[in-house]
Each structure stands twice: as C-alpha cells, then as structure tokens.
Image (cartoon, rainbow, N blue to C red; front, side, top):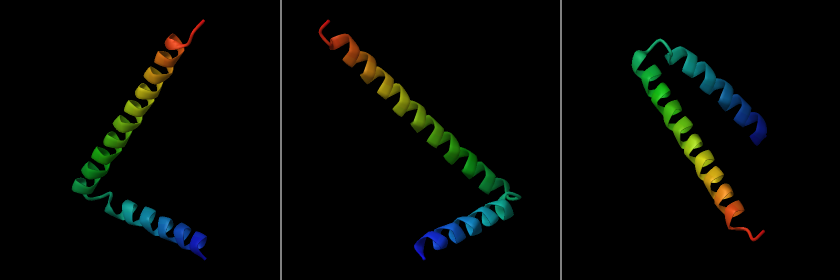
Length: 61
C-alpha cells in the first residue's frame, strides 16, 4: 500500500531527524532550509497581495 509506505517512510524520517539533532551541522542546515522556505512563502504571499490590490485598482467603478 503506497499510503502506508509514505507514512512509514515519514516515521523513519522523523526518527532519523531526531537522531541527527545532536549534530550541530545538521541542525544548522535544517534551520537554514526552514528559513529559506519561510522567506519563499512570505514572498509568494506578498506577490499575491500586490497582484490582488493592483487588480482591484484597475477594475472600472
């Protein structure tokens, strides 16, 4: 079953992350990746907000 395989893989991944959390290099890399994802998410939200406000201003009254 693909669904249970994904769940199992995710569980193994989480256990591996906790095991590696004692390694400062791994923690640094994970923190960097998380910051990059957050920055990308904020940029997408800002772009969406800008596009939405631009569309509203350009609509005829």
